[in-house]
Structure formats: C-alpha cells, structure tokens
Length: 481
Image (tube, rainbow, N blue to C red):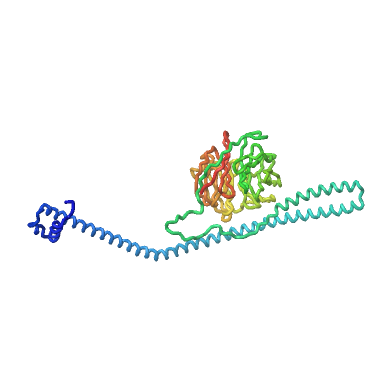
C-alpha cells in the first residue's frame, strides 16, 4: 500500500474507485502510477467495514447473554424461595430435636445439681451448727470457771479455749471457701441458623487446630529429687501458670506461663497420678498406691505456695481426673470395672448408670478419661485397643473412634469448640477429635511417646509432656485455628 500524503488527484481517483469506475479519470492524470493504489484502498475499506460489523455482532451477542443470565437469575431467585422454605422446615425439625435433647439434658443436670447442692448445703449447715453448739458449750464453761475456778483451772481453760478457737478458725475457713453456690441459668452460645450466600463457606462448629511451638523444657532432677521427673499430670491455672504432677518424686510443682519452674512444691505420701484445676486456684490431685486411695484438694497461692485443704478417701484407685463442674470431678479408675466415675468435693461417689463401658478393667497407664462439659460427654482412651470411646451420658449412646493416626492413645483433655485432644503415643502426635468422633487434626509434637496434654482456660495454649525412657520434655504450644 502506498504511503505519503494523499493529494487531490488520488482522492479524485479513489472516489471513482469507490463508485466502481476505476480509471475513468486517468486520462488527464499525469501520475497514473497512483491508480494502482486504488484497489488496495478499496480492499482496506472493505476489511475495516467487516471488522467493525463483527465487533458489533459480538457486542450484541454479549448483551444477549447478559439479558438471558439476568432472566435466568430472576427465575432462580423465585424458585430459590421455595427451596429455602423447605430448608428452613428441615432446620426447624433439627432445631426442635436439639431443643428436646437439650431439655432432657438440662433437666437432668439441674436435678443432679440440686441434689448435690442440697447435700453440700446440709453438710455445711450441720458442720456450722455443730461448731456453734461446741463453742457455746465452751463459752458457758468459761463463764463458770472464771467465776468459781482456781487460777490453775483458769490457766488450763485459756489454753483449751485457744485450741478450740484455732480449730474453729480452720473449720470456718473451709466452710467459707466452699461458699460458692451457683445461680442456674440458660445461655445460647452459638447461632442455630443463619443466612449465607453462595460464596460463604459453611463450616462445622469444630475447627481444626494447628500448633506453633513456643518453648521446650527438659525435665531433669532438681532440689531433693531422687529420680528423673516423670510428669503424669498437667493443668493450667486461670492466670496461665501450669501445675505439674511428678509421679516418680511424689510431688507437684508450679511453672510460669513461659515454663519457668518455681522452687516451691508439695510432697505427697505416695505416687500422685493426675491433677485438675477447679474453683479458681484450687487443684485436685489423685494419689493412689498400695493402701492409699485418695484425692488431695489443695490451693495454689499467688506466691506459688501449695497448701493442702482436704483429703478425700475413695473406694477406687483413681488415676486421671478432670472437672465436670465446680464441685464434681470425673475420674478414671484402676482395676475397677467402672473405668470412669464421679466424685464431688465432699467425697461423695457416684457412677454413670446410663453408660455402657467396654466391660474390662485397666492397669495404670492403659486408659485415661476426660469430660466435655457442654456436651455432657465422657471420653475414654484404650491404649492397647488403639481406640477412643465417646459416651453421651444423657442418651447412653457411644462412638468408637479407630484411625491409623491413633496408636496407643494416652492422656486426653477437652479443648476449644467442644473437641477433645488425645496423645497418640506411637505416632508422636496429638489428635483432635470432634464430639461425634470425627478426626479434625493430627498435630505432630515432635517428641517421643507424648503422654499428657492440657489446654489453657482461654484455649490459646497447649502443654504436652512425654513418657520416653530417655529424654523427658515439657513443650508449650500456641494453638491456632
């Protein structure tokens, strides 16, 4: 195609070319070589015309697609109303079923709570009444001795009154510490139904957890330790401190939220097995061996001093322990056909009559149990069966969890979103399981034979220790959801 300025002659020629009379005016033209460009110009003009028409046609097709899609979406929106109504009806049935189940569970819990509370209050009242009578008797006696007694009798009386007052102070302190009557109420902590768009991901209530290692602590002998520590129990205090039970050295000790070990500890008469925190800074430790079958109730001060408040004597050898409510513990047993039982802070024992357990007894280290309070669900690990049993107390239904990621399960504890965490000994991991028995996550803790796991009160931290014959460790993790 020719290039350069298009002069009037060429325009004149091209005008004829467009009209189909190519060369009709070439006679007077002195530059006939330009007529060769006329065909090229016509060709370009034709191509330009076709390209623009094709683009317009494409735009029409696109506009038609938009119109069709809008019409389809409008029809879909109309039909979706009926579908949503059907879905709501289904949710309504599920919701009513949940309400009925919750009603049965709540009524049962309230009745149990009221029975236990009545017994506790009667015990407190009887103790206070007996103390009041005893003090009145001593006071009357003191009045008589002061009026009619000798100096020696008055001296003896003063010492007697001092001992009586010291004993009364201890009794009153215990009674006042147990003055923790709860007000009953209802609370909805999750939405049963919500409207979602197509882009929103509908997830289950339970969310998988991942772990980020914060710190590792080697468990070595300190102070008066006779053996290398073997931590068989862990729990978090409300302020983030950690309570650890050292079975081999018959003691429990306190660590900071950064795993700094404090110098204070408490020594037991025989082997402690597990620990749980209850009622703020109070802890319960199972202590069982030989003729001793006890649960020690202790308090941990802000100065990390551990003091014994009360010792409960039990009919069963208690191993693992966790909290059911502020006053009742769920314990795992040793050599007992009832592998899980309930014991309250006054020592009253009871059983899960509506639950059918595996029907066998366990030796130390063969089974651990825990409790999911919001679901009223018990979880039992069976080391040699490589199985986790989940029991729903109200309905009596159970789920057996078997999975290749669970091998020789050990300690267990409740975690966020009503899930439970179980140490899998031979896979060096902690397994997160939903209350319905689904495996949510398998978290590698990079330690040989993890044995005990505990989760902080705010569900942000996890502590894990192991039972390896060589290096024993305590690891602190950040929990990420």
